[in-house]
Length: 185
Ligand SMILES: O=P(O)(O)OC[C@@H](O)[C@H]1O[C@@H](OP(=O)(O)O)[C@@H](O)[C@@H](O)[C@@H]1O
Ligand SMILES: [Mg+2]
Ligand SMILES: [Zn+2]
Figure 1 (cartoon, rainbow, N blue to C red):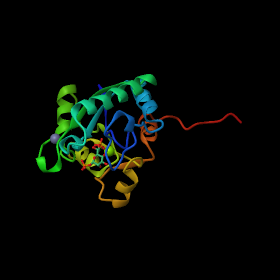
Figure 2 (cartoon, rainbow, N blue to C red):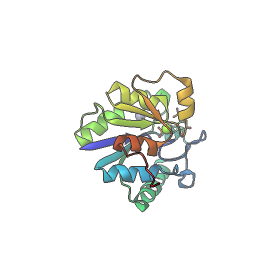
Figure 3 (cartoon, helix red, strand yellow):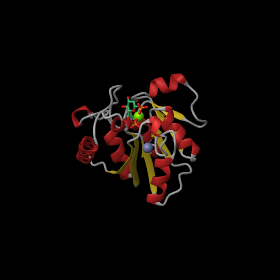
């Protein structure tokens, strides 16, 4: 089975330094949902692995998170895209959990749930911690420059083998090796 793991905020939807706390604040990045649909059409299943420390911080609760994800799934389906599942870490840094990226706990859970190897599996994120979580378990790390991606690239220290692309659509072009657009002359 072909699987891609996406970070959520800054990859699928716009991110915010004040967190994404409500469905209204969840706004898809142009082209991202359509890119997921293109992956589905190429027989990729798509899952999300997202840190949601806003829950531990009391900024929003699990009902709000579910409402945000209901909106995300509906928006995806409206363009023919299917997000198979969302794995999230509700903890704060000082909870010292195993699932908060850059720890790979969520990725191990995904590998077990889907019975796949993580080796070379595309892991697409906008933050260093996304890429680090993927790198330590052998994923192929892709940095998008949306969300916090530009800042992440400027800060450097990216895991070896990380490649960067303007956005999720561009990563999908690469993964599907979409032929370069040609125009009749
Ligand atoms: O990018 P993903 O993993 O999908 O989600 C990131 C969000 O949970 C939030 O993560 C926070 O990081 P801290 O949890 O405060 O370190 C901040 O970066 C927020 O701006 C951001 O919205
Ligand atoms: Mg992110
Ligand atoms: Zn956690």
